[in-house]
Image (tube, rainbow over all chains, first blue to last red):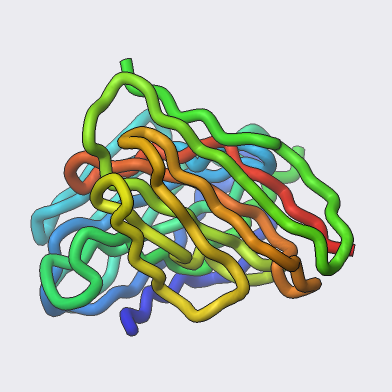
Length: 115
Length: 110
């Protein structure tokens, strides 16, 4: 069973604060690491797909880094806004074994940005 | 463009009643299809996946079953719902390693 852990479980910040979350995953058989943004009653929205060690991706105020050798990824939000409030999910895509072709999700980090 | 439809959006069902959730994909052929569930306070758990018509793999033992009667149709079913079946169910499809999710079904078993 693959273990994908996210921390913290929840986070409350003030508007304008910058914040970051962590996703840790197995460092063997790595293929890709996904980040999703999930608002209540909506589909998870893909933010980034990261495949290479050292990858850094950016989308507006949100960015992510990847370290496949040690098995972690960070998601950063600069200058948080209330509309950033959502659950942020990471998911690990395995290159082999019985988990091939399937995403294994972390439990998510629930972000609440207060005006 | 590819789209995925999932319905219903919400459902309240009594214990012991049957269940049928449907997911259809448009704009693609032979996708991999998945059913995920998020139970209260937990992450997304893969329930079933399918790589083709009639091919279903179950990830966890449970009270649910899945079927894929057509290439772009994936159905999640139960003959008798349990309270523990409550949760948020998501259908997804992929062609490579990118996933697209449906809008989900909130199931409450009472």
